[in-house]
Length: 270
Ligand code: SF4
Image 1 (cartoon, rainbow, N blue to C red):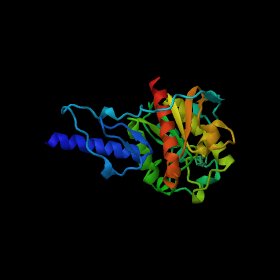
Image 2: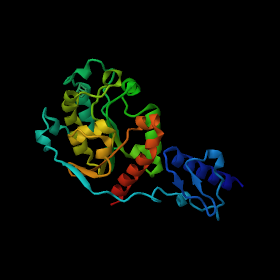
Image 3: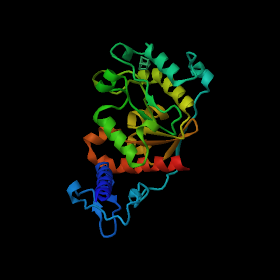
């Protein structure tokens, strides 16, 4: 029956997505259990009881870790102390225009495009990465290419459409050879991100990778030390996880990332 096929396809796509991002255990219909070790061909289509049987039986909530305790607290300067009149910029578009003309650090010399960030101006979830790569520099958009696709997939697995979040980086211009931004480059660029946070006013920030987390939190610590706590960034809960590009290099980090994003998802629901 066509509706059965459509539902089975929907299930399989969802389950593949869960396994792809490292959700080792997924809920299957009675008598069917899968693990991350199984390939898509091992996924038997569930038998729905009715055409209306929802795919919600597979849930990001199952086995989600509890929300951890508090971590570091970062107070943001008020808007009028951000410098360069940034506090007077009342829209993300105005901030992006200021970034487009910025020459505050040496990264301006090698860029093709600035990458200010994009997404919903009233996003509940804000994602912050390290800096633009080659494709981002070409397009002026954050998190495009393979890492961006994985990020979109991760968001989808917790029921969040990519269009509903705001995605930005610590530095808005591409560092040469994709090296880490230097401390003076991050320091010069950070006020833009702070203003973006003030304008978007997200409920949760997800820092992607150690460099983003260190820059936001103003510390030199490993990712392992910064994960596992809910930090406060100007009063906004901040969760640290791996950068999607790192996940493409090391699939072992997919499971901890899956846990981190489910913590962020729970914070959104609080
Ligand atoms: S990285 Fe930031 S501070 Fe440096 S030139 Fe680009 S926009 Fe300006």
